[in-house]
Amino acid sequence: MKKTWIFLFFLLNTATAQVTQSVTGEALPLLEFGAGVVSADVPDYPGAGHNTTHTVPFPAGLYRGDVLRADEDGGARARFLNTETLEINMSVGGSLPADSEDNPDRVGMPDLDTMLEFGPGLIIHFLRPSPSSKIKLSLNIPVRFAFSTDIKNWNDRGFVFNPLLYYIHEDFPIKRMIFFLGADTRFATRRMMDYFYTVAPQYSTAARPTYQAKSGYLESGSNIGFAYNFKNEVSFFAGVRYSSLSGAANEASPLLVSKNNTSIGIGVVWWFWKSKATGYK
Image (cartoon, rainbow, N blue to C red; front, side, top):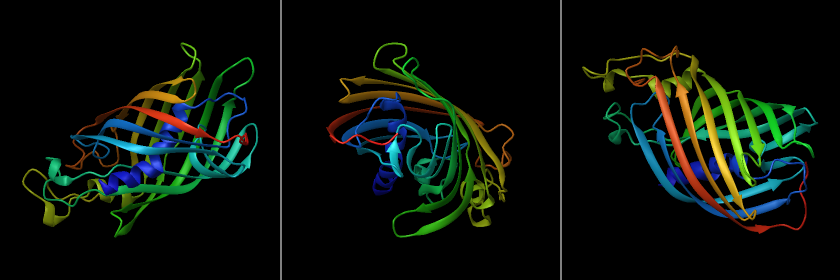
């Protein structure tokens, strides 16, 4: 549970921010605090044949500072250049932990710890909200350093390149509803691929032969989500992600069991405090 809380602190605020708050050009609070609960059924790792359901409460926070941001336009990050069309930033990402004993394909192998990612990124805005349009279309291009942790140990997991094209439409199809659509692809260096797909000799079995992972293409996916904001105080959200690993660099690994993964999540956030000061655009 401790590892899950680390993930939630760094990542859930990013996910909920992108689909639960206004994307229009109107003045928004500098700082917002909330609390929520989410239930998500996600694969243990890319290409896993087993999903784990996590249902946990989490703290929520949004901050719309000039440099430091945790908002609806890219999640938690620090931006160093911001124009109408471009943003250069440092952002975070990651993935959930998984217990190997609960996964038939990894029994006897070490658990997968929480994965955290941190690195520079570029956001290109193709469409920005205006008084006559509540649509946003942007491309987020991050390159992040990854490491896994169980609190006591921190291990280098190499780098990941994960461009994401996303579309947000506010008040669609009804007032106070936000529609989110995204598509992304992911490449990783050997250290991260090792973590997911290498089978060392001491962990090999008749059904799980020794395998050495390699760097390259990891997966591609698409996301669709909806959120409904009730009086700008309570946000209900739900989303689905589908990912394909066909043609992945480690398609031959015995740990890449499924070439298609699906994640489903649903949750609610109560925004109980908002600052009087307005944030920066």
